[in-house]
Length: 303
Image (cartoon, rainbow, N blue to C red; front, top):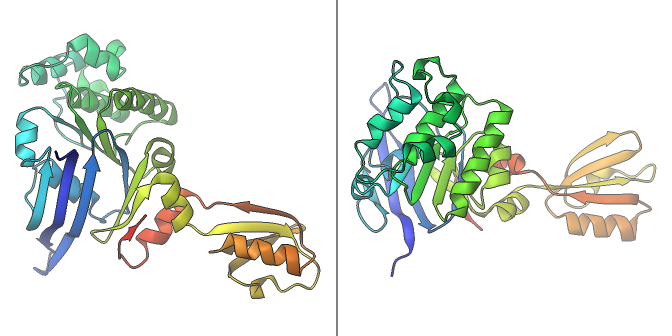
């Protein structure tokens, strides 16, 4: 039995630019998403993230390749209420209250969750009587989230869900997402906030130039894709840039920080071949991995 929530094979979506020349916004993506996964979808602007999401949501059709959701066409999963989505803009009427907006969309579902439940999940109970047009950008995103969970979906897809939210509101939103995940929902979210992906995603899929450039558990993507740093107090006269495997060197006070692709080998050399002392090793951040991989050659790195 196929346990994949999403399966994409050789997925391509082509467009034409202003001069009429064709380009692939999504350029041969293969992707499988299993039940209960929490995936952070990362990539720079124009990488193909939103186009990929649009194909999963049946908002646009692939030029080539296939995409299935719950083993069928995405449109079928949409009709059955098995997918909920939070998109960046659109879809809200400013003159309706928050509660009336949710009631209106609930009427289109066969078995929607109760209004009170949805308001609570989206932290909107205190805003129920406010007109949507009077809500801040972050509050409107929470309204979109409320609409996304109305059908009690098995799959949640979030495209930059915390756009317009301040730090406190973003924290509350992800607390809500943690509650959604604890109920076994599969969650895919695209974000520019590296910290969000690092703290919440269990798997990272990085996209660059329409292709997947890294795909694996969050810790592995960060550790394997990012260079590490070795910091130590080096003896006078040692040419740090000439040490084996060193990519860059910086010095502050009496400590020298060395960036390297093989921290173990460099540390071993410093401890056995030099008089270096007070040595420490640190792992690069997910942001380092993001910048390195999405700006490099877009050949996929499967972790």
